[in-house]
Length: 193
Image (cartoon, rainbow, N blue to C red; front, side):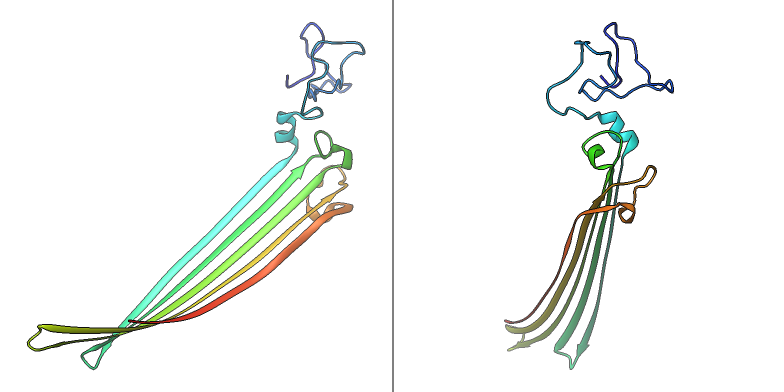
């Protein structure tokens, strides 16, 4: 059930006349009522209350760009340069309210996560092509140089102990957990054929 009901199925209201969320732990029921008093598993939770009182926000941003240039010179040479760039950002904000659910015993919980990944890749390819003996024999040589760089930066944190109406990480009175990591990877390679 979503709201607390008496043994006859009628809604029970609080002192202000509002419906009471059924948390499956006997909350708001007359003492001794056995019907729907408790439920096994997820006691103290109510999905509708979590949706209405908590908040979940996710933002994903992605940008990808590519460019190239090609130059022919000395009739038999061709140089092609390619540049690729990608940036990905993920932001997450989660608020578990201070009244009902798993964070009610710690007066609410806010969890934040941010991940940023940036990749940069450039390739230069030099080609030499020629034909001999009335175009019966062909030769083609390539030298390719590539540089790849990727950087990642992630942060996560949570805090508890919120005053009513507050749901920003910095407004918590008790830092619960935090962490993060940065990593940079670079590689250069040369290929000839």
